[in-house]
Amino acid sequence: MSPFPIDIRPDKLTEEMLEYSRKLGEGMQNLLKADQIDTGVTPKDVVHREDKLVLYRYRRPAQVATQTIPLLIVYALVNRPYMTDIQEDRSTIKGLLATGQDVYLIDWGYPDQADRALTLDDYINGYIDRCVDYLRETHGVDQVNLLGICQGGAFSLCYTALHSEKVKNLVTMVTPVDFQTPGNLLSAWVQNVDVDLAVDTMGNIPGELLNWTFLSLKPFSLTGQKYVNMVDLLDDEDKVKNFLRMEKWIFDSPDQAGETFRQFIKDFYQRNGFINGGVLIGDQEVDLRNIRCPVLNIYAMQDHLVPPDASKALAGLTSSEDYTELAFPGGHIGIYVSGKAQKEVTPAIGRWLNERG
Image: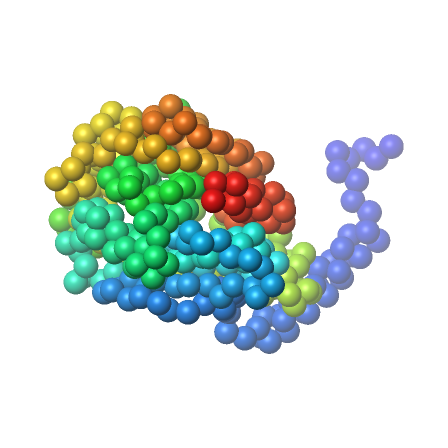
């Protein structure tokens, strides 16, 4: 028995060091060979533009029958929406198309100082409503299906509450509803932020500032451990490209329009507006009881940004008689990019929508 607490064999250590060096050597070659990293893999077409906003329609597989009700995806402002289409075998968009959905997505673009005065009213009663009306007119339908993701889910809840006659079915993914649940680290941090001082000083809020805030919530796994683990995939060219795609997305963070950021933080994080009321979009108060359409609420059980309880709080707040919850055994990002999500979550959304016409 070794007298030392850790039994290190020189021959094994030598083997590990040689293997480590080999992976680093091959990894450097793979990194040097990496071309421009693409952002989204599914073919799509621009069908509408307004200011910085671009509305995309994804091309449907010829062999799949398409639903008559179009599906509009509303993503968060904080990150870029190509997370939903990050690689060929891990694409929420591709999975939805395979279930027969006619998929549209709003790309908010990159706000600059000309956009600092944009408000939640501009985004929800303006941009989203005009995209919905474009789909209604183009498809000759009275209602569309909405899929809201994270902050985009909060926007979709507001929109549906204010324009219930235009939404047939609503899907929310990792969407915060109760912004002050116990253990919500992001919410605990935001409570003490002087958002008025921040916006009055900077105008727009830098995306880089918010990105490092999110990373600091899990500093070991999100800023250190993943680069240590990266060595194990460096000798696989495809895995290197996928890692770089994810890195590109993580650090591709748009600035936030100042007035929208001010209102969202104060009304939702600091005042918990969905729970306590008092959120005004334009001159109308958001009341989730106005939502009567079918609702599918999807949350991730290991989500560190939107804890499960924050999403599950939606139950009972709407007037929907067709409310369904779906729990995913993973995290905030894994719900889009993990293999398990491709097999379970995306097909479930498609089935749920198809069953409701």
